[in-house]
Length: 588
Ligand code: ARG
Image (spheres, rainbow, N blue to C red):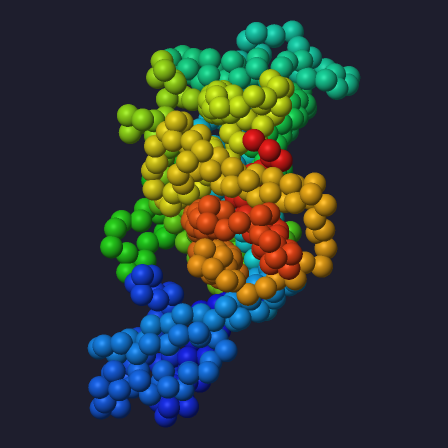
């Protein structure tokens, strides 16, 4: 189904032509004076010079050609030459009917769907998830769902931080505590235990301790570097121990992500490309892209048009060790080999922007990717506390994700219990679902690149631009539909009729924007577009609900038509929240 503005512009263009003017002048836009009209066209103003005619005269000519338009119910030529437009109910009804029967409510599928890899999450083994990982997970998941719904093939990759010095630190920490474990006995040739000899919480204690110790104790640091080296060079016991760390952490991460409704298609990590690095580096050297500068191997990535200094991309440190960049470059190479994506999107904190600029330029320059392949960085801002500073625990520590989620659930539970009689277990289940909407919507409704304040009271409110308000509206629709069914109302073959009041028409006008919104959200990779739309729709529905009798409508055919409209509204709203990565309860 075409976008509504395209349909309107087409109708308007025909009228311009019929009146003897250029059809491209018939571009229609949403009205900037909603008190006067629904849509408008400024083409007569634009054409005045060319046709040496007063704009109002042109507008008048065009309006005359539209007197019996099926699309516009009212076309007014107003001074100095605007065309103020109102849609006909019949036209709206036709569009709504088409939406209701087309797959994905009429979202046009791209002629050439793209294959997109989305790199989001980025958790690190043996380290707990913190709020910084939350934004990546929430935003990345939504971007993936939106691009997929818009007809692209999307692959989400968690891209684990599972390699390098942090792993050496954990292994060295474990070795200090348990020097007798067979993993550290390099003579040992037997099998290793199949179950990990530690729990995830033990691991999470070991990492910060080992990391702190390495900063104070150079001797410990040297041992950790040696462990890293041994691990990376395939020493059997170290690899076996690492595998345990990997398995235990991944199991825990999967649990945490799934509680957030976040799913990855690939659970690959930095370690997966370790063996590909030497060949990639040799190639960069052989082709003359990489050279030694102050002992390190680098690739220049600055360009003539740069207005700020872009430092070279470092490929190997002076001691020959690979870096974060090296892994990201090798990962690009591997993704191209395995999946031939048209695009890779990275979702991280915006402080990594320069870093990714270097990596992308280096990948292009060294021809790891074809020129037409897109590498996109979507940087997000910081989640701040109410003091406007990066979110911290009360004692100033890094806020663990689990804690933040639990706090939101507790607050939601309190609010759910406030005005309602409900068994405790049910209230708990419902508040868990609603809390997720509070957390995600609070994040997604902001422009991703901006910092925002995590305001638990506002996010969990049932009023205003919040997740709970959206869910509350969906639940309200569901309960009307249930009541209708209980009263013996039939749900099949409900014929939609023309809107016969202002609130119904206003709601239909929002509904028909759905396909346009989805295309825009996908093109701009912007979940906040979905939020803004679903909020508009919720407002339009609530206005309708307060002004129109639904179950009390006396005319049976009209009642059925209203029910059909409610079903469509519910389905569209549920699709929107699914794109945002949360769902609605049956009641609340
Ligand atoms: N593990 C990193 C961190 O916690 C994030 C990884 C982001 N993705 C990437 N391809 N570099 O900071």
